[in-house]
Amino acid sequence: MNDRPKWAEPSWNSEQRKHAGERYRGRNLNLSRLWTYYLGIGGDADEFALDGYLNGLLGLAPGQMRLVDTAIDELSADGQPGPVGQ
Amino acid sequence: MTETQPSPTHYLGSPSTFRVPDETHVDLTEFLTRLQDLLVENADIRDFLEDLATMTATKLTKAGNTIACGVTVIRQKKPIAIADSDALARNLDEIQNSFDDGPCLTALRTRTITHVPDVHTEQRWPEYMRVAAATNVGSILALPMELNSTAEAVVNLYSTRTHGFSHDDLLAAERVTATGAKALHLALKISQLRDARDNLTAALQSRTTIDTAVGIIMAQNRCSRDAAFQILASASSHRNIKLREVAVRIIARISGEHEISAAFEE
Image 1 (cartoon, each protein chain N blue to C red):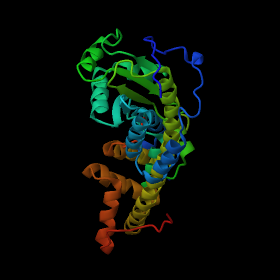
Image 2: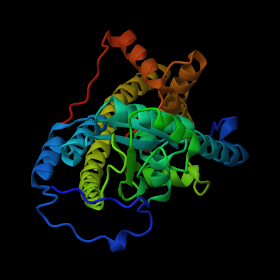
Image 3: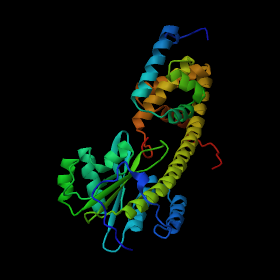
Image 4: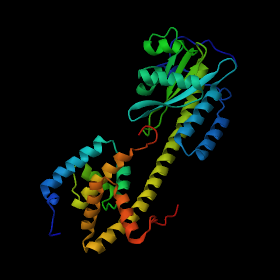
């Protein structure tokens, strides 16, 4: 894309990655549950890539990072009814 | 059945000295059959545990020695009394969890069987024992469940008699709990798979709606898929409405349809 928005700059990308990972861990979300939700709102990355992204090892396309953020927000707003001892 | 006089020492740490009970002492055939029925019938882990607690209490109750059974699990790092055979077990489990200390929680945390032969003379967990002694419980036996790290759970047994658990009773309780734990492990796996399936089904439905809305935005704005997602996400965050809900509204505005469903073979 030639009309790359500000948040697609590399510096923003690495900040965003760290931020998403921290929020994911802070909210005690389950990776598979998060990935499934992200898939449901149009996410294209697979679970492995999402895992890598949340742990600061992989980058994702800007649109995908935004969807991960949305998934974290919407899923933690729902609360997670987990089975025993999750 | 003859009652052996139990020794007042607790059993922690010396399980290898127990003699093996003869099979007629703890016949688990019926118990196993009923556990299988429970696994097939119960949709919900709580229901399963409720039935398991009742079955365990019934299995271990003898004439003149009624056993109550409660199950405590760790959920989000906190102990929760999730199932019980009666009000006594529920009450004692909840008191213990409110103190965050007691024989059952110790059993859960140390993964060892914990025995209180007489709540009136027990020196450990003084706060809890003071409250427990005021109820009609006489002795307590707590057995952690082996669930291969899928979850943490403990079976709490309460007898109204002091020294209500003989060596044989302890062995019987161990076998019943180990068998129950295997069934619970399976129930948890079934439940996790069911949840994963339900979540995937929901994801497919949701994605169909969102993809449709993204297509509409692309056509209206003559933009790329990424840009359309960006528009959708902005609308969602500005109005604090879920992405899927914004997508539903976009579709409804175009076609009047409120339900877009993906055909999915259950």
